[in-house]
Image (cartoon, rainbow over the protein chains, first blue to last red):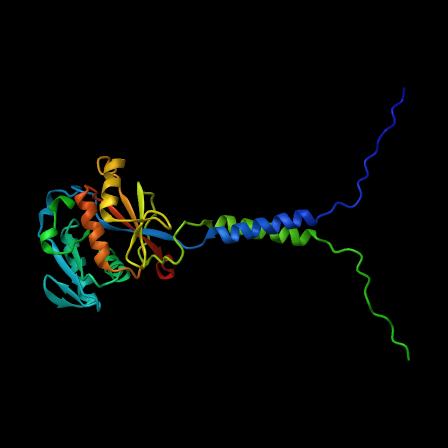
Length: 139
Length: 138
């Protein structure tokens, strides 16, 4: 018995659903993707990671709401902060830096100062409300 | 005078170049972008110039512009509740870090309160999520 051979018609294939799907995928990825690069700043270092050299007295930096800085109580500018931090960390790379921002300062101001300290070589930076909160176990 | 009809007959448009370009766009977005982080709407993290790898943390806490702490987009949480949660999950016992996703306009007062409360709960390392600015990215 000879079966009738069914021939498929390979005529024009509709591309519209394919294009629709591709555009939907494109939209999904465009809206769902994030092109911003995120990082992290340490507000407090891991506890008790410092060596013996970390026993050096910490430098206390205060930040007021208007952005004014002080270094162990003396009013300084950002350039002094960077310069002196670089000097100290060159001598002792585990030099403790305590940043005490005013309550009304904002998170961006705190981050900017922490960046400046980190860029100058400071590795042990912590955030404290006042000098009595400093816990050496944090370093 | 009768003008010649200059209308072109459009029988079919070749769609393959369009599909190719769109596929290339999808590839570009896939490679250049990464899945969006689920920040609450309107939260703008602080800008930083220091390039540091973003690592995961045992717990992420949001500090919004209204100076309130949140565990998710809509779930506000107090510092004492957070302290309990940290103890419950054993985060401090395992020495795991916490991540704070703080709005850049939030006050340092809340940042300090969080730092203090978490230190009391035994958390040593707190990471503040930042957005790398173009200056450092270059």
